[in-house]
Image 1 (tube, rainbow, N blue to C red):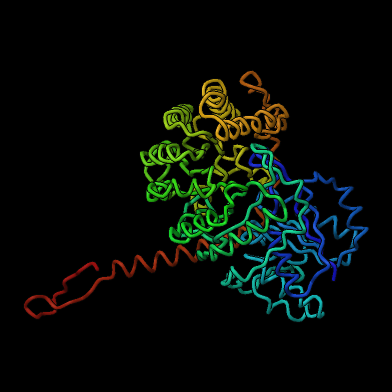
Image 2: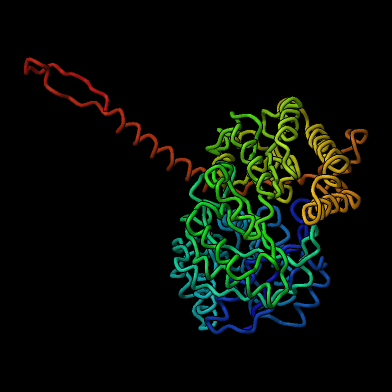
Length: 539
């Protein structure tokens, strides 16, 4: 059976300005498939190769696959749907599969707007995809599909979702096949080296209201640190990777295993050949302040902190469980350990004002991280914060849910003003850094790295790809009146998806009502004199 995996060609001017990122999902799925005996696997990275629809048609026609698999996050969903539509047009007999976080939670929406998709994989795909391929190869798809856990499909006009599959318990048993990727294409611009995105853990024990990762991965699991280092060493030796970013939401949660990971990197002398970065929480940096020199010795050079907001009210709204004053201290500790810091701010909620945006700039400049990012609040349609704010969400064009397009319209300003104020923050922060900090502070590696980051920003800015500014027709404050975000306002929530949301909301409401009834249940007890007079007590 010939299998073609395709990474959709979607760009937004966000994370990709720092480099071309290798799609790890391909390596993990291919590894599981090959372990199960499926070896005729091909991969097209349409995003990195900027592949046109015409080029995709030619390649599919040449290969004539039996199965075409694609993935999508929310902003790339329409491109992914189109990929599978093209596959169905070119190779009608090919079985089309879509996976990823968006399809997992929005399968009724996806199957309503893209009925040509044969199957959706919901959740972690390594084990589900093997069950699915076995059923297809044995001719059991029509008869046994309801027995395959973790999928969704159409049966006539009805959308069927089978029982959820369990999470992958043995992460160390996964054997990713990194050889499918064309490694010279994956470059980290600040250092000009090949980049990889391995993972040490899946899941997150925290439940930030704007995030979907804890819902997708469900339970938190950590790999054996020695096996993670084995994988990284292989990537360095065989693919000449010079920088990696751990894909984990927060790799420092399990302090003992993270220390073991760092010590093993040092033991193998890998920091002399590869450096790396992570995303983590401010609280972990505070907890591990005595260990930061060890982390730096292990090659950790870049930490992106989810500082998120300059106001405690917003941190509480995001359910971050952190304090504003801790952010500044964490950045100071990292700077003293010679680790580059990146502060992340979420902006663009309904209560955003020019004054609150100015607060985030002043706070960022006071904290003095090496880098700062202002990401537009993007209300993933399957997160708690979206459900809380859905009455204020008016844009359902998911291609714009990319952290750079203002989906929400703040009460105090329009979207064009919001974009202009955010760009004002970027211009001030990086022009000051370029003039007074990056060229003069530190020598050698620090100077090279920071100037490389500045190069990445400048390159994207010159090409008008940063923040999708070219497509939005933004050229500076003078162009504010002509800004157009090109929302497709014909996009709506499918009735099937809306019914699912309402059903879920009703279930949650009933649970809350039952809990409240139990919490306030009246106990009838005899009065002191032993009579029948009732005394009420709230439990």
